[in-house]
Amino acid sequence: MTEKLTNIIKEKGPIKKIGVIGMGYVGIPAAALFADSEEFDLVLGFQRDSPSSGYKIEMINRGESPLKGEEPGLEELLKRVVDAGKFQCTPDFSRIAELDAVTLAIQTPFADPKALEPDFGALKEGIRNVGRYLQPGMLVVLESTITPGTTETMAKEILEEESGLIAGEDFALSHAPERVMVGRLLRNIQEHDRIVGGIDEASTDRAVELYSPVLTKGKIIPMSATAAEVTKTTENTLRDLQIAAMNQLALYCEAMGINVYDVRTGVDSLKGEGITRAVLWPGAGVGGHCLTKDTYHLERGVTMGSDVLDYPEDAESIYVLARRVNDFMPVHMFNLTVAALKRLNKDIKGAKVAMLGWAFINDSDDARNPPSEPYRDIAIEAGAEILVHDPHVLEYPGVEIHKNIEDVVSGADVVLIFTGHKEYFSLTPDAIQSLTGKQNTVIVDGRNVIDPDTFIDAGFVYKGIGRGDKNNHSLN
Ligand code: SAJ
Image 1 (cartoon, rainbow, N blue to C red):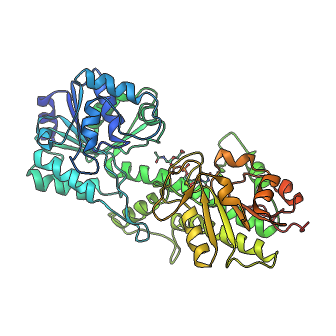
Image 2 (image 1 turned 180 degrees about the vertical axis):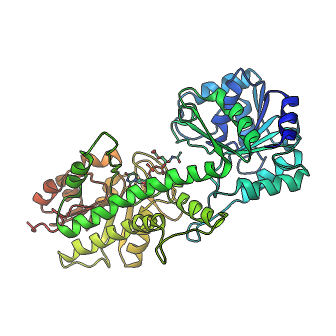
Image 3 (image 1 turned 135 degrees about the vertical axis):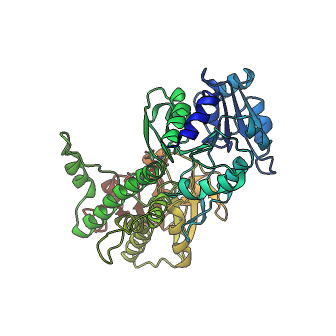
């Protein structure tokens, strides 16, 4: 920590004016909550006036949220702070110069999911814009999910290069990762504990001053910037690992002819006094924009580490292995499909497959990195004819999403359940049989939605993830 920065900040006084860069599902609620606090006088939301998202500027300045879907409390909060003149949206990045603190909440997607290289292009542009107008004593906070080491290296370098100022001496620099879930944005920001990590103590302290006023139930957990980056990527990496542990167990249970859900109930019964196991759920795969990428951020971060990693020779990272197990599940769904058809002396080639569920998560329209996509790709490759139903997903590039389940199931040889949408829990053998018109329709349950015996007794050829006790049932 340098005296110089501490003195400049003391001279500047408490944070009063804040900027938020990136008017998306992280930036908008964050800006509105800063504006709603008595501690702060003005919040500026910065949005490029681009053809694709420039419309947000006008909308936000009318007090309307450009975010899709239900966000409890956000519309009213936005209206209130805009009408009070405490929050406004602008494309004029030069106004950064009048602020005390700036946060950046800019997406860091994969440039190409196969390459697993993050696309930091938009984030770098945002950081460069801040650097151009950076003033002594300002605080800069990165909220995006980033590879551990990014704040201390890439962000610091760009800000210093653009401003001619020195991080940790002339300005404060921190990382405070977002932990919000669509549908509960405001509540998550207010109630989740907030990880706040500075490149030095003065930066951490200034970021603690910025975030404390918006927390209700949540508390601040201060640490270094790199520890904060590792915390964020690790919380998703460990979740992915826990899911992979259950997916691997499901595959073992199928091989051993037992029901993974009996085993899960048994293991989960060991509770309390610190002996609880985090047993998640096996399924048709892991999708979304968090768990599919954060493991690779963590893995890349460790290569940027200061010391050589001491690790068992030639052993693969368990985290990367977890990703491989989870990415295998759609392939396993395909293998179950082929095995079931074989029991009817049918081939996947030319088979009509009805896929129920495209979204990566139950009862949602979010179809980012859906496990259903790799299944569809390999099944089409193998010559199957695929129709996709999803009650929530409206469209997806290159895939026709049907809204009428009858259109998708009629004449099908195979019915697949890929997403546990609540609509699918009421599927009955008769309804499906009358649509498929088949003596023995194949049904493959990827999300433990249907009761195996109900369908087996009605003549279906059943396969289910983890259902080793049912997957080789006798045919009626
Ligand atoms: N999944 C399983 N088995 C499980 C849980 C999930 O197969 O037991 C699958 C889901 O079907 C889905 C994928 O994993 O395809 C991801 O599901 P998710 O519930 O983790 O949802 P995400 O990807 O939206 O994760 C977000 C993360 N939140 C943030 O990044 C702020 C994650 O850290 C949260 O733990 C998670 O939400 C949550 O708990 O809701």
